[in-house]
Image 1 (cartoon, rainbow, N blue to C red):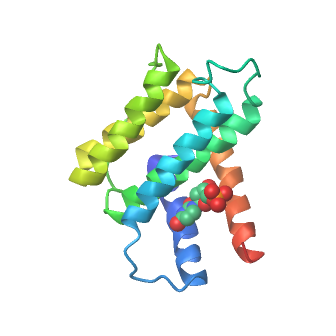
Image 2: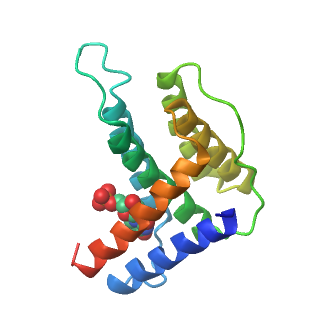
Image 3: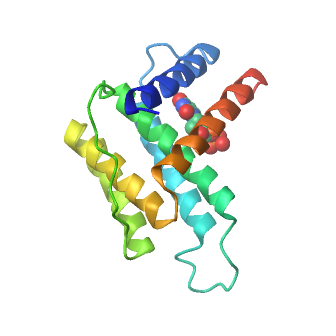
Length: 163
Ligand SMILES: O=c1ccn([C@H]2C[C@H](O)[C@@H](COP(=O)(O)O)O2)c(=O)[nH]1
């Protein structure tokens, strides 16, 4: 899937949600920023990477991947809000974070930087670093795109079922 196809899938879902909830023209940027921060917290919780006080293991690889792609939805959606969907962002890298906690904290900071600046370069850096966080969790870009497609479909069904 190309990046343009990825944005197009998100665009369809966002438009469906907006129609379903009568939100056409509503300012959703800040809500989507908050939603992304919440998803990041949920993702960190599933990995349990920061829970030095607990011996419980992390959630399954699948559960963590599903949380991860929730975040991808909101990143794409934020890019669409600001008209960045035609940008050529190179998401392919071999990088991974050496320390997961710091990887998460970096994304929280990048989300806030992007919230303030609404700048294309900050958006691209956020998207790239989020993909690198995924690689640190063991997800290659292809896994992420496949899981995204599945969750996108689930999101449509949820809307159709009165979520
Ligand atoms: O405008 C929106 C609003 C929500 N979602 C998707 C992203 C996540 O996959 C899911 C979040 O749903 P919860 O399970 O957190 O309610 O909804 C979008 O793609 N676009």
